[in-house]
Length: 255
Length: 361
Ligand SMILES: Nc1ncnc2c1ncn2[C@@H]1O[C@H](COP(=O)(O)OP(=O)(O)O)[C@@H](O)[C@H]1O
Ligand SMILES: [Mg+2]
Image (cartoon, each protein chain N blue to C red):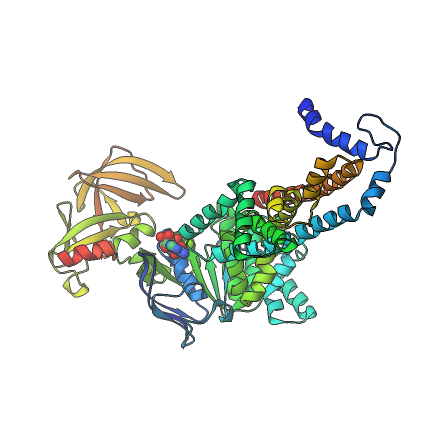
């Protein structure tokens, strides 16, 4: 186990250490310095990529969350057979290789003649995130949510009030994990972005890819470190949420 | 008493499965009516139609003489205690109870007072800030009651509210429910599959099976005069036998003729096939040969105040269940006698299958 952990984390650790290295070397430690971070923040190219990556991630996650949640609610009103079919269809894009999705989306944009750029990346990301939102919100809509909704109506609430006060809080854990999952998926993505971006627009991943071809600068280490830290933070947030929700479910069951 | 709710010819099916087969029911103001029947007989569906959560395929629902069949649930002056309580898990006890008051837009002071009063009524004073998952089953049940009555509905619907509780708690809650009902002075429509619950609490019991109402009446009537074998079997231990009217006011069971008090006038002419109920406590033990028929005691069990015995009849086909205060030994040969009044003659049960057979006859 320790060895596995070592293999997994040592490279990342090396990367982080090197990003604080004074000299531009991959083997010699020249003392602690923030100069690569400085270079990073001064580079218009890199800053642009960072802004693109995170703004696309947030917007795509937002869109996917709203659309996915509405899809789940729409599905809940359908017959069980239809629901299962739809869920099956929903799973396919997730199993699909990214490269297929990427090329398919590119062809689609070419066909409709959409100029490829920020909007096409955003659209693509929102699209491939929707299934994940559906997958995380859907389990929260069940018999017990139905019953709670009916109980609210029984107590005189309007449909809208019952939804807002009773159903939404029930779905909330699913909605937030759907959002966070979408966010990380979007930040992580390279292949789909690569095929759906236009010339002259970069996200962090496509930028690193093209920079690596020219030659690695330590400021890329700094960039990667930032991505890693953000991903770690989101992951921790998801885990904390999850374990808290589990604990609540457990106490509910034993009560 | 004034009629409050009336169901007229309610028919309901899910897909191709007919769940309610023409239910007619009348509930008076301030009455405690219990729908009693085995699981799956359509009790919950009936209640959901009254509450406004299902629309019947046919038939109408009236409230105070007004047709409310198409009125949405949130407009009906009817509240429900749901089978699994359906308490709102993300709200504390106080907020759960306050829900309907907030919907109505009552002011904060009134809400606080009414919530406190409701909690006191269900003997959970000061529970406002508790979380739902900190409550025991019995407490959740009481909170569900409090939440349903805080807004003073005209009718309270209760779907097996005691079903999830253990026996002792259940008996305690039966008294509580009757007390609450008295204090509130509102109509209760109560669902259970437990005959003992139904008989102890209700003013009127409605026995259901397979989407039909089999019989309705006071607990006493249901117990003493079940109209068919289904009801008799469902309400307590009984000897239920198939027989045929061999003569006017004589029924033949297993080759022996028994005098009874039902005849052509009551709808049981000679040669009609019938079901017969004889309650175990109505069979008297007399010396061998002195009764209507004879048998041998095959087993004996002392249960509290009386003995329960199984007796094999001499004709051999029937095993009788007897309850008696006197002690008799296993193996003893006895005679048995039943007063004609205690022989309950009944029509064959009302259900789709049986109805079809009856037409064939
Ligand atoms: N929403 C539904 N969809 C399909 N079948 C249902 C639905 N609700 C109830 N049923 C069926 O109707 C029958 C009666 O159910 P119910 O009224 O809940 O019975 P009870 O409360 O007496 O146990 C059952 O066979 C049940 O499976
Ligand atoms: Mg039920």
